[in-house]
Each structure stands twice: as structure tokens, then as C-alpha cells.
Length: 241
Picture 1 (cartoon, rainbow, N blue to C red):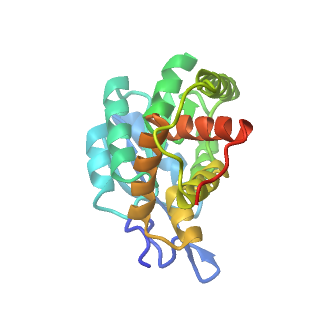
Picture 2 (cartoon, rainbow, N blue to C red):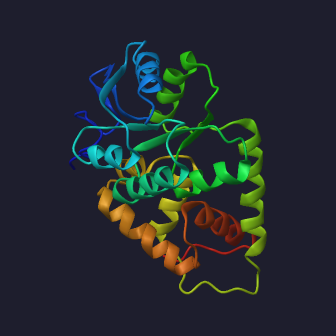
């Protein structure tokens, strides 16, 4: 099975033999001086390859479809609307490309909107530049990178989503065995590409199953799907084969 064209390696895990391939990134930052400083910080350590820099978030999202990108970095001088639009576009085109958004705002609600649009990481703009390469590697490894305050906010939102699904509600159709397997993989924190590899199916097939899952559960996001699936399990629902 061919790996995703954006992973930039001969294996979907990102390894060539026993050597980890460089993490290809694109940087979007309107302020030229800040863009230069971020570029220097992000490429200060081995293992990160800067594929392109741009002053527009939309251009970064377009470039990501043409190059072997694994992480996009959106700088703090970009407008929130353009970042949200770019992150949403990127997430729909290829959910396995990770986005890191540097934000001046410390408002958890605004940060939450960025995460719900599809970003995998959010950091304050005052984060020391020397910490950014570590954040890039964490994102590439499938981890989320968020401030502790946002993590608490996300956990509360997750609990509210679970609580909002009442026992009296009925799912439109039981989930299939394969759909439960995908829920399990994503619930374990794996990307869609990693889930496809572990299950031995194409990435496009995973995306198709996800659309079916959203429709059956009446949700619109991966976080909501996982919350409702956990609620179903707690109510003793069994997998239907």
C-alpha cells in the first residue's frame, strides 16, 4: 500500500531503515523580521527541514499540497481569520499534516477555536524560540502541543460533549466492527495514516469510514465522535459485526 504523499519518506512511519527522515516544515509569518527569527530557531537543530516560508497563511496551505510537508507553522502576526481558514483547509485536504499556531491571545476560547479547526498545536507567541524544534518533533510524533490552561479547557469541553449525549438519543445506525476499530485507533492518539497502516487499509478508506461514523453518531468532529463512542461504551453498547 503506498504511503501518503505528504510524509516524504519511503515508509509511513517516517523512517528510512533506522534513520528518521528530516521533518519537512513550512513557515507562514507576515512580519519579515519575525519570520527570519523563527526560521533560524526552527532550523537551529538537525532533523528539521524548512521547505518554504511565506507571509500568508493561505499560501502555506497551498504549498503543503505540493511538497512533502509534515508540519505547518503559523506565526503570531497573521490574522486569526486567515489562520482559521488555512488550518481548516489543510485539515480537510490532508488531516495528517500537523499545524502549529503561535498566538498572541491567551484567551482559551480563541485557542479552542483554532484546535477545533484542525490545529494539532497551539503555543503562546512568547514561547522561547529554542523550544520550537522540540514542539515540531512532538507534533510529528503524533502528540498534541498545547498550554496547560488550554488542555484543561479542552478536557472540560470534552466532558461537556460526552454529557450532552443522552441515553435517550439513538444513533442512526450501529457502528460496524471496522468503524469501532478506527475509533479505537484514533482514541489511542494515532493519526489517520497510522490507523490505516495498523489496520491494513488505504488512508482514503479510513477517511470514508470517518464520514460514516460522523453521520451515524450525529457529530461533526473527531473529538465529538470519540466522546459519543465513549458514552456508548459506558452504557454497555456492544459492537455490531
